[in-house]
Amino acid sequence: MTSRKLTNVTFLRDEYFEPFSVDRYTFFSNRSLNQEASGVRVYDKKEAWDHRQHKQNAYVKYSIQEPSILFRGGRVGNRRKSIQRKLLEDLLVLGSLLTSRNWQLYSRRNHPQFPAVSSNHLEHISKDSKQCKKYLNTALTKLKDPAWQTQFDSGFHLRMLLNHSNILNTESRFLAMVVIWEWLYPHLKNPKGATPSDESNNLVKIFSFILKQFWPSEFNPILAKSNIFHVLRNQLAHSGKLPINRKYAEPWMTQIPWDHEYHNQGVID
Image (cartoon, rainbow, N blue to C red; front, side, top):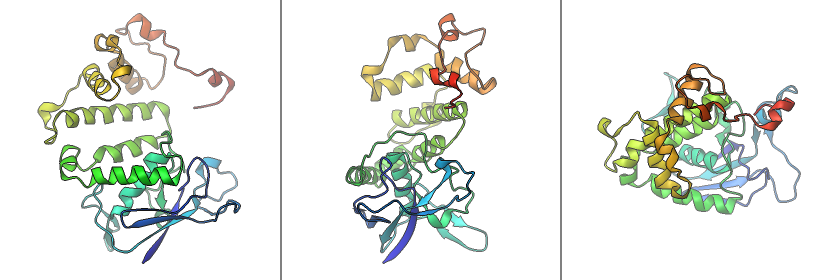
């Protein structure tokens, strides 16, 4: 049985969680119920912001590992010594997406890919380890389905989503999200695997298709007649700031209030 240290495995800020098993992996908290918070800080400088303080607060035990699906064929290390990426890394990606925390192997803390912050810009889906176990099992079943792997390129969009959520700049994060929707559009259209003929550069068409498929009640017909997505992407990609000031934008687009009220109080999103 192998045991590996993990960082940032928390649920709604509670560092303790009941042990749970997914596939051949069992996750444990570093501490017991009612014990004071503990853990080794990866960033231990006094001037470091609180959200940069990664904590080694959990560990995982397993026996045999399967190769990674999300990182199929990938390896970590250097030219002299490298190892094949395993399914555990897929579970860490899924756990990060479910909890808005960056689940990481403690042993990777000095790797360039180690995230700058312990939390990401996603919403909590799993409030506790019981929910997380349920959703991880559901996601892993999809991940192991050959048909799903064919349609979604072995879940490449999940890696894209996690990378997007760790971009600290708001404008760049929005642009990265647009790329994910553009990627999803042809893959949703063709279950046999996306082809160039399935792709589109029409953002209105892309967003309308995705809204109708996943959030039909939220779809507004006015979007199908508007180029707001195209204008907004160009605004951020070419100017990097809001509000919209493009000459070809419709008047109502230039009048959208983009800033939160608290921005005027010096609090940055």
